[in-house]
Length: 447
Image 1: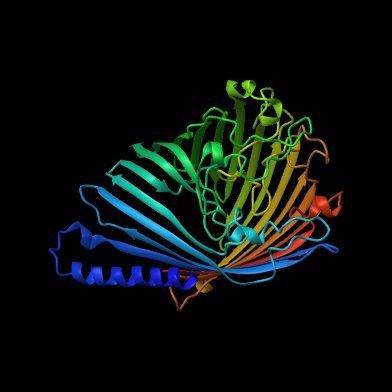
Image 2: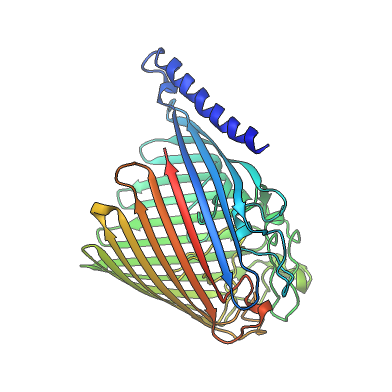
């Protein structure tokens, strides 16, 4: 099966090359002659070294992505894309840790977390119809979405993808509006498309504020998710407003303001969530958000850029009015302190601090980044403000990215992570959460 799928991808590439030769004989104004084939080959090596006697794991995944984009016809075009992923070598990640009797989380996220015996995956990602004019863009089908909540979050072998409708309108030079209605999600680290009712709760449900294990999958009748965005871009001021509506579940308002003053960039974000009335009709244990929860987050950032380096300081506070909630199955939050292996989701009355330094050598196409993150928040077993019952922690992320000068489209990305709890180090509270160091090495080839 693995060989068959690799041959299929090679066949598609060959077929496109033959098609391109045939097109060259056609009339120059024929829209098909503008068709393009883009691709990506990715290799991802991940190794997690856990503390004490907890089991260590490693794996290496390889994959290829092909995207065919037709030429334009009366401002319309079609995109079709698929991805193949396979395991090339690995430790036995299908065995549970002996102390906690849990599977490794991180290494399995390179494959299909819903099928722990399948390491040969083929996924249809893009399949959409697009219309593009001077000031208007419409997209219908499977697509990437980038917002502060719904996002590709492309940190594994394939990103989050969404199915629905997207509309963008440029009102004038500095003002634009966007609207999305999304009915399904290709959840990252799975191979299937899920509607909201099947997706939300697909992964760990965490705890309810009273300490009960939450059980909210398939408890709602959500028809999808709506997103409205207004964007203002001035010479040195940027304003973005988002209104997220998870049908039958909750709404969320998100505001971001950025200001550039010489070499400094100042930013502030604020979000407010409100549960819909339908939550009251469910049993306590089956609610995604309780009727009295009003999650709010304030996030701020100062960034200094000069020559080849950049320094960033950021602080986020999730108020005690409720736990910041956004389904992990639909995307990841992007507050100023949100970074790899550290998010605000599930926390209330929590303080997140981030300090980051970056250095770039343009001539060598070499990037260095170093982050320090610390989360101070509710203690373990304070479920009213700690959905996933995690401990306070500190974390260091070190990143090196290199683009080859002599071979266009090839880059290497190394991410090394150290994460440690501040208080509790019991195996059940750190496995797949903290007290580990992790090595991630990604090779990308774009064509």
